Structure formats: structure tokens, C-alpha cells
Image (cartoon, rainbow, N blue to C red; front, side, top):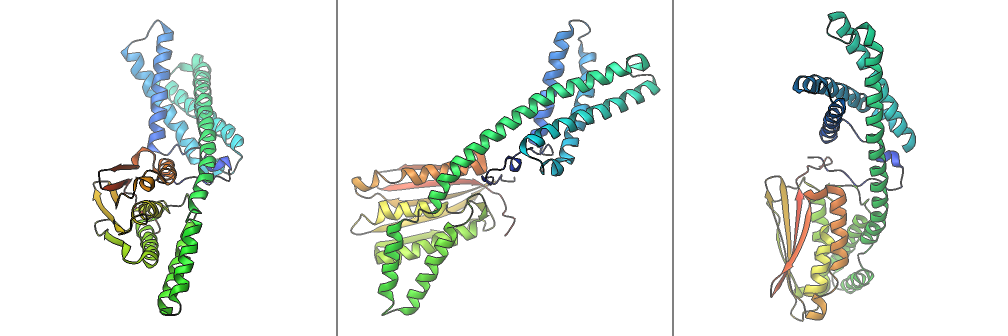
Length: 352
């Protein structure tokens, strides 16, 4: 599976359009639209609509549609250089020209072999083919264009929230970390240096592009540095159970997916408790998915009932944009523990 990265929402619409007709899902859509069009055409004929006619016309229409789609696919690199409107018009013109070329070739070969429309109906045959492709493709491309615009607007709105999430290693966490580092300097300068490096890595990670998938190993390393900072600040009140040996290090994940969940665990499950508690992170592989669970004790009611929502909503929205319905974040709690269960499709990271 290939995950669709969240597009750069700068927003140039040629970055999301035209779509690639080389993708099997879009080809299946073309096949379905073509077959529905043939069936509707047959209903409109009233006469001569039988299985033989349906089979012959369907075969020709599917070949015509496939050739047209391949033409748009091959020219996609050129179309991407145009504006969004230019790419839409260019895609339609390519489809019409491919239909003209293909129907002409079929008509000529059929006429020579004596099975085609013949010279008398050659022009009509080509005209009907071109008009059919022009009408169907203009509707299909228009739909894809509007869908791309709608998705770009969603991405732009989500990006604003994602940027807030990326910058939300909370100010009080920064101040507390700096105070922790300052307290380490007199007695443990080496520890202060390591803490400073960890803090720098955390903020470097928070400035990554939200749409760029990173390896799970990188995200786990960032999450571990965060917990180390919290352990330096809260001492023995933060216990960590870290079980990630079964997770594929080369899997893809969005940056800052785990850190906000761990921050919630510490802020609402550990810090409010005088005796602290244990944060557990464990993961496993399940067929084509990876599952990561973060567990923390429930804090006092006034703390455990608030604060989780914003981070969880942001993460869910980012997962939806990047992986669609293949990813999920589910939370639940019992009388003592709060659980966040993250499920992701296993997509190998290209940089790993």
C-alpha cells in the first residue's frame, strides 16, 4: 500500500490535480462509468438491445476508455506543469484526441477486414465515439476537479490546525524543561547537556512538515526523548514501560503522532497524582497493520475529564487525511486506566 501524503497546502491545485489514471482505483472507476454509460445507451436504443449488442459495444467502449485513460496517464507529467484549470482542459483535450485516434484506427481496420462500420458509416462511427468520450470525460473530469478543490480546502483548514499541533509542545513544558536543565548544571553538567540536546531534538521534530511521513523509528525516538525530559522533571513519579520490539522500524507514520498522546498521558494521568504512575507504550504487528497502545492511570476527576480532546481530534484528522479509513485512533478507559489505541496501515517508509 502507498500512503497518500497530505498535500502541500500552499495551495497550488496542480499539486492535487490532475489525478493519476495509472492508479488501479481510478481505472476501476473509469471501467464502472463506461459500463454504466453503455447500459444507459442501450436502454435508449429501444431496439437491438440484446446481450450480443451489449457485449460488442461494452468491449469496444472499455478498450476506448482504457486507451483514453492511458493517454491522460502518459501526459500527466506535462499536465502537472499547467494551472489547475489548464490541467483540466488539457486532460479533456487529450481524452478527445485519444478517442479520435483510437476510433479512427478501429474504423479503418474494421473496414479493411469487413467487420467494421464500413466506408458509409465510418465518419459517423468516429463522431459518435468522440462525442461519447467528450461528454463522459467532461463530466468525469469536472467531478474530479471539484473534488480536488474540495480536498484542497480541507487540507488548508487542517494544515492550520496541524501547525498549531506541531507548535503545541506547551509553553509550560518548555519553561519546566529549561528549569530542569538549569537545576542540573551545577551538579550534573553532562546530564544538563544531554537534556539540552533532547529538548533541541524535540523542537526540531516539531518543525517537520506535517504532510511528510517519517519512519516509525524516528517517531519512537522523539517520543522517548520527550519521556526522558519528563522523567528528569518529575523524577520517580514517571515510570515508563516501553515495549516496541515487535514494531517494524521502517513503517511510516506522521510526525508528532505519539508525542501528543504521551503528553496527554503525563499531563492528565501522571502529574496530577502525588504518587505519579506508569506510562505504558506497547506495539505489535497485525497482518498489514501496526497497532500501538498508550496506557496511563486515570488522574483525579477534575484532570482526567478534560484536556484530551483537542490533541485526539487533531491526530484523528491528520490520520484521515494521510491514510483514509485505514488508520484509526480509539480511546477508552476502565476504572483505573486510560487507553489510546493507534492503528496504522503498514507502509514502508522510502527514506528508511
